Image 1 (tube, helix red, strand yellow):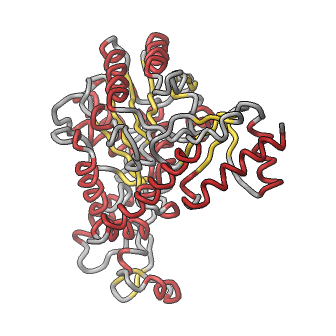
Image 2 (cartoon, one colour):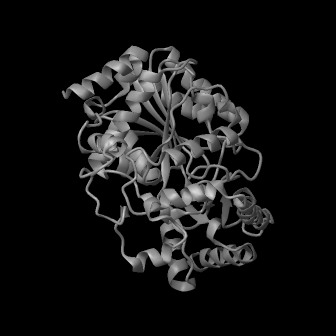
Length: 434
């Protein structure tokens, strides 16, 4: 083992040995090298005559660039666009995102957690979690209504076993009892569990109520009390898009500093929260399991995260980080974001209004939804994949089939006035097949 990795492991063990147990074999081996980047950072501070360290080209005291590109980006200083960004992301962006997290998640007040590390959007954050904490055979606890890419990230890439639980009760709430039982089974079998909490959920568009959220946290605390190490990951890709009665913040706040055997990991990003999908700017944030500062633990986890970033993508894109900084600092930011939120909420409520007429009850019902981008129809008479293909071929309408009975509809990309026509078309297509 590299001495730097050994040193980081010792820092983790000094603050919380349970977290060291949570790391995968790769996670234990990770470190951030004291190589070119460290030497370049030192040179940036002290090399007042010549700095011949980092591999970019310079000209006239700044980064070299093509004028045909800069002409399109004239509002930005070339220094904020062209050089490499730091491996953990631009410090100003990390600080701004932390401030945003505290503002939007009141339960984080007084909690101890890391500065967010910039990732290449949320999927990259999931990949980091998989590499750092998942070995072949480890169990990932997920609802049966889950985003399909989790399978690639955790099962295919890392050999994990995905343990699914029922998503909804017959009464239409989140099936916390099924979650708790699946978690207990994993705890008994493995003594370690990765819990992935994706709210608002993709594909269902559901966020638990405050009571359901509290019950989820209680279930995690319970297995930790019994000796199970839990990596509790909140996939907050659609954070903030809460339209009706539900939690209004991330469960990360309740999970942070919950228990010595619980490591909370928050994955979020500007991608969907700020409507900048192509920017690929996300964040990973860690919270230790005790209600006290654990600086050695946090430092070591950040260094290991920087190590896996360095080993895979080197660093995240600089321009998009600059653009997000400018957005977060803009005096118009909050008002513009509220306007887009109201548009999204209007679409979600229109879907419910259309479906609650009962006109389509003989063909499909719908799963509970109150947030996010999506909702799912539960088909009663036809196969979902057959319906999906027929909608495309006969009507030019795109949807996503999930299993044999469920059809995902992204109302996020349908104008509110077009929603009645959309569901009328889906109904026609069902009748065609029947």
